[in-house]
Amino acid sequence: MTQQFEFILTSREGRVGLVQFNRPAALNALNRQLMAETISALEAFDADSEIGCMVLTGNERAFAAGADIKEMANATPAAMLDNPFIDYWDRLRKISKPVIAAVSGFALGGGCELAMACDMIVASESARFGQPEINLGVIPGAGGTQRLTLAVGKALAMEMVLNGRFLSADEAYRFGLVNRVFPVENHLEETLKLANEIAARAPVALRMAKEAVNAIFEMPLAAGLAHERRLFYMLFSTEDQKEGMEAFINKRPANWQGR
Ligand code: DAK
Image (tube, rainbow, N blue to C red; front, side, top):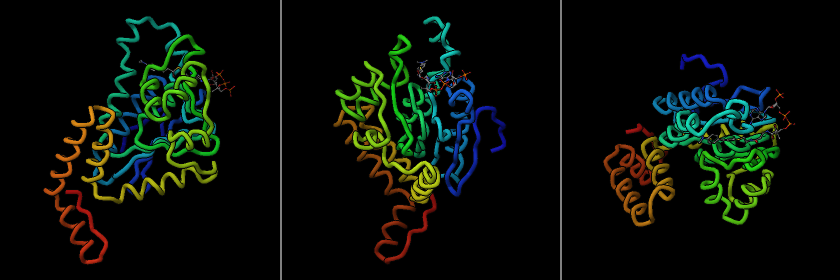
């Protein structure tokens, strides 16, 4: 990737594309440019056959403390409608390879919503999740009321959205919001290890697997089941399905081709 960015850093760690927010003085507040850069970096990794999985992270103090309050403080409804900000979330939903949020420190408002829009969340022990928009006289607007409720249930989601309650990493783990919790020191390393394990799997099946799980959030159960079945049948047209099953039968590791 040759693109130069102002508010993010990108790198490759094996088959994993790493995108790191780099606006530490503002606790990685998500301004328009940071969001545009993030999505364009993720889209570039998504299109890169050498990359199988992506990790989105911040720094030890903050994943992201929300949308940039200073940028939107004087907005009108019409200006918000014209603002491409929310389009970035829609583009994130279209990323076909798995994206893992590696969250240390604050993941608040849009930061929490961004982590929840990823496929998995790996937290460090310092992670704090919250939807404190109520303190600003607004509500979550990038999926927080929906994804948080699906993840942790109505009781806790209401408390977080109505009263600004934060969740610690341990609570987030217990309530099913995050996959794993690691000490701050090795949090990113462990997340990259997990991401590389995922990235080593059969590439086409990986994308279909993500699409199938996400179907539960997009459609009624009957449609989701039918969608899953079509994706399952479709995978029998790939060389990797033949290779995977033959490798199992011959007791050898599979050699995935991504086709
Ligand atoms: N925006 C802008 N700057 C921020 C910020 C934010 N969200 N969060 C922190 N900062 C800045 C602070 O202003 C401060 O800058 P300076 O004063 O040094 O210039 C610097 O980061 C350090 O922050 P603090 O001095 O406040 O640090 P503390 O450790 O004392 O406090 C904190 C940390 C995270 C508790 C605190 O900074 C805080 O409460 N931050 C705001 C958290 C928040 O309310 N987040 C939700 C924002 S609203 C949309 C959909 C969704 C959204 C928007 C649009 N559409 C449909 C279009 C999302 C909205 C939101 O996320």
